[in-house]
Image (cartoon, rainbow, N blue to C red; front, side, top):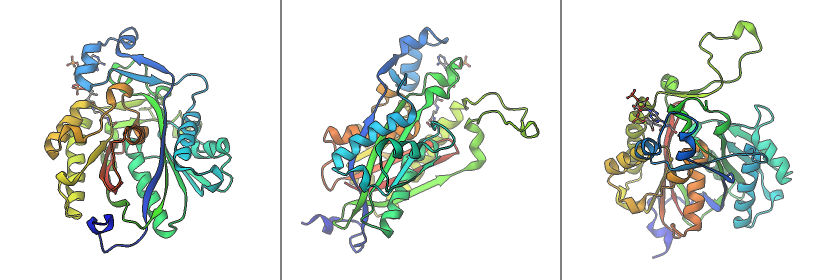
Length: 338
Ligand code: UT7
C-alpha cells in the first residue's frame, strides 16, 4: 500500500514539514560524576540512581554556544545536501545564548555565510525544539519550498551555579540541528500539542544579569543562575508530558502502539521511566541517551534525534513522537511521519 494511503490524515494533501538532515555537536571535554565528586558534596551513586546521568560534556575554549550550533548545522546541511545560501530561515532555540544581542541565530548565519536567511532565537527552555519544529511547520504550510535550519543549542555550564549540587550535576552542553522543508508525499509533521503555564515559572528559572537601572533592581536577585524546585518540577513533568501525549494521540485517532519511536527530552531517567510506564510504551521504542550527556535543555531532543537517525532507528514512514518539558513552564508533544 502506498505510504500516503496509510496516513491518519490521508485527506490532507497540504505540504508538511519534513526533516532533510540532522546533525549534532558535543563539546570535547567529558565530565564524569566522579569529577563532580571533587567539586561539590555529591556522589556517583546519588547522581546515577537519582538521575540516570553518568557523564556530561562541558564546553571549553572555542566551544561557545554559536560555535557548537554552527558545527551541528554544518552536519545537518551536509546530510540534507543543502548549501547555506539556500537557507531562508535560521532559528536557534536556546536559554543560554552567546549574547542577548545579536541572537545566536545571527552568529550562526554569519559563520555559515547563509546570506539569504533571516535569523532569530526562540526561548522555550527544554521545550525549545518542539516549539521550533512547530514554528517551522507553520512556515512550511505557507511556503513548502522554504529551507529552514532549526537548532537547539546550549552552553548551560555557563549558567549553572557550580556550588549548587541540586542543579550543577544535572546539566550539560551541546547542540543539535535539523534542516526542514516541505513534502507532499505523506511524510512530515502532522500534529502538535504545545502548552505553557507561566504561573509555575518560579519552579525552574534563570535570572538575567543584574539590572543597570538601580530602580529596576530586585531584592530577590541571587545571580544569573539556574534555580529549580526539583521535586515539584519532576511531578509536573511526568503528569503534563503524559497529558500532552495522550491528548495529541487521541486527536489523531492514534494509540501509543502506533508510535514507532518516542524521542523525549532527556532530563531524568526516573521521569522517563515514569512517563514510559504511564503511556504504556515499550523500552525499546524510547530513545534515551541521557546517561552520556545529562540535560542539555533545548539541545537534548535534536541531539537524540541525530543519534537515532544515524543509528538507523527510524525507517521511512515510521511515526515518531517528540515530547518535551521545561522552564516557563513549557511543554508539548509533536507527531511526525518520518
Ligand atoms: O529539564 C527540564 C526540567 N528539569 C527536570 O525535569 C528535573 C526534574 N527534577 C529532578 O530530576 C529531580 O527532582 C532531581 C534530580 C533534581 C532531584 O532528585 P530528587 O529525588 O527529587 O531529590 P530531592 O531534591 O528530593 O533531594 C533529596 C536529597 C536532599 O537531601 P535531604 O534534604 O533529603 O537531606 C538533597 O539535598 O538529595 C540531596 N541532593 C543531593 N545529594 C547528593 C540533592 N542534590 C544532590 C546531589 N548529590 N547532587
